Image (cartoon, rainbow over all chains, first blue to last red; front, side, top):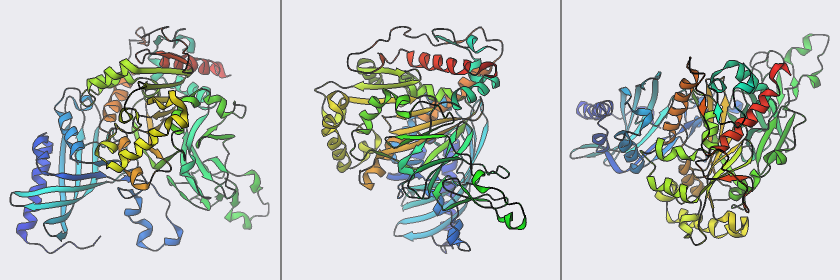
Length: 186
Length: 426
């Protein structure tokens, strides 16, 4: 991964942030079907699992010793990501929200997403690789409150009517999960 | 509080105190977790010398490791000097476990090899007596490794008993057996450990109700028509469908109804058909038609065949549970097929699963109900199907329809016996 974001224009940076703020507002307002319209039909939506690893003594002094990447069990690994989803999965999640038997979220939870640190990292034709950070506050009815913190590694497609999300890898900042679910739309 | 008052004789009435009482929990630790075979891990997780994974026996942290001798070792993860965990990683490979405090170091087998301060004192400690405490009994069957604190416990194979018939209906399909993929998914819930266990021991009938947002009604109708619940010994159980002899291969084959097969390639579906084509030869005609749902092994191991996951419910007190689950795949499948089939698990189960979020919620809510005051005269009703189970000509154990709650009644009768055996400080 490159360490410095691309030089971009204020207009493009603003357009990316508008996209993410709009997305966050749709999700917090429970307008999930409108959120689905922001996705490419071939979307890949993944949450790597994160583990507590022993540091390798032979790598001491090197960045690799404590790199984030080595803690992740992602799609390419022979571990098991927490989630590896397609449009079908996300559609099921969205439709579930509008059914009475979605018992863990009926009555619905209250959420608030704060998205920041939006960085355009690469441009490959129409595809943009964009990083962003989020804090998601989640209050389930009759339950404790939870704060989810993480990074999103997105691929967006730029079209004439705005951006579409083609890939999202969500790196949660937890190996020990104290939440009732990580099945949210991050 | 007397244990005899918590569960009535036919176990159709279960006291709320069984779930939410600190005294009961202390009895469970000694009477159940101090004496049963407890699941530690799978041999596929520790293939090479020095490989280790963490495990728990109730709240006791354990290191399960492959030794330099190729043997399997289980030691309590606590330094003999000041008690700190000597292993802080969930898994890995190492030559030594080193305590952070004074750098006492241990081999993966648990032997103490270095006391750095030793050279400065005249009286040298006997290191051979100061190794990590070993789990006194460790045995494995079909790659599943169990440990017990009870040196006198019966052999693991006898403990599993006829559950081996049902487990082999799955394991036996694959020439190389199965393997666990990666580190377990672990999450903590404010619930009692027994409810996730009960859920997987035989409670398939909540599916069409709790999960009605996702599970279609036809699945419930199929389970009612061809579903069985079997209890091979109290606390051990299996639920499964027995498909008709003329059912098409795509309906019988394991994995075909999972997200991996539905969204995967033709190669994946052909692999699953090929497995099924050999099933009768490998596990016999009857078991080739079995399409498993949930399995439970006393006290806290579960196997969800339909979504191919092993799970352990680790108590953290009466009101907290750390639930672990792994994706399980055929060991000899190509890597790309393993990567596809793991989604049969993660799509619906685990901390991110579409279905399991509802389960987690009801387990938390049940604990609330179990904790309330002024309702001790309303024990939970476990009487559905009382006495309706019976022997079966082909299937081991007591067998019944899945709506019969006998799996839970048998669990609680064993639970009561186990707690009574240590009641009164015995």
